[in-house]
Length: 253
Image 1 (tube, rainbow, N blue to C red):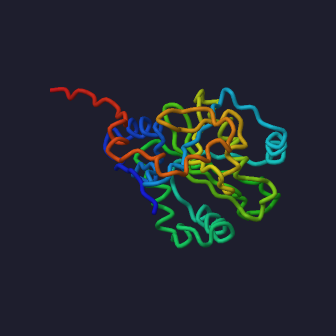
Image 2 (cartoon, one colour; image 1 turned 90 degrees about the vertical axis):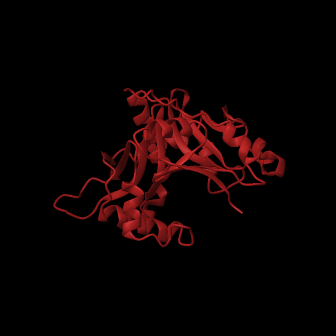
Image 3 (cartoon, rainbow, N blue to C red; image 1 turned 135 degrees about the vertical axis):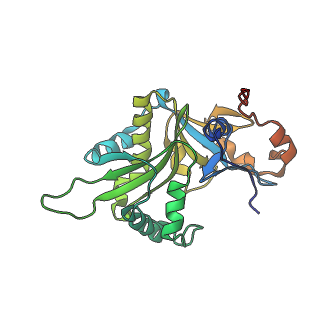
């Protein structure tokens, strides 16, 4: 049974709250911040890359060269029909039985546009063929901007180009964007020990995980399999008591 600790993300201090809680393992979904808190499992560990220490491996360097022709376009969080068409193709090919499989265009627009904080849509497109007006959008990432990094909220890509490893490429490009902006981290969401679908995250160097109330280097991924036992989870009351909230600014008369 999945269980989450969550809070509303709204009001004039939404950005500060998001910045603060994201450093403590929380994740945003529209106007809600949540953190997994299952009763007998703490396998979901928030992960982020230290930009300054990241060194791409040989495969990642090849991917950057392979996709060097793609054009990046950073836009405001506004949903388009072209994005939704790509999103549907991605879901039908990769997650046809997932929780988002029935998402319609209005729900997609809400996912992209209902954000109370600083967000961007990062689009990647192939160069248009001469004289062609065909759609060339190939990958999209909904990205939040924190005071200390970028958070890749959700990414999807054209399943026809699986060989280009567009998901991994998007992460590599976000590392470059963060480095150019002087931001120290790229947040990747949750990593689960032993999960084949999330195993790719452990392939990035300088990866940290939020464990035991602090960010630590992931080290050997297999060492974290013990986080699947009942005693690995503290009671909800203790978890809430340890959450650090941003200080409220004094109200002027």
